[in-house]
Length: 116
Image (cartoon, rainbow, N blue to C red; front, side, top):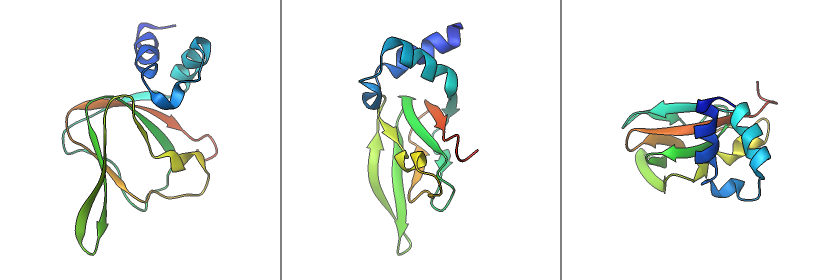
């Protein structure tokens, strides 16, 4: 295991969606996804895009929102250990929200192999 995947593996241990994973399963998962950085105000995805990835927040904060009647509606704020865009686990769906970084941060991104 590389130093980078050991760090991701340790951070994934905080993700509530992975609470039931064993240590070896977390190690394997760390190899399947990728770590991505984002800046304050950076768009991670937007409404209408294909939902092909599940995000686990490692550092920073992310806001989910949508546009309704020309107004942005804040739906949720995510903190380290939270996951978002779970619709990506189902083939053929599109994003129904947008995700924007509220600070510098990092996410672990797991792509749906059926969408690739």
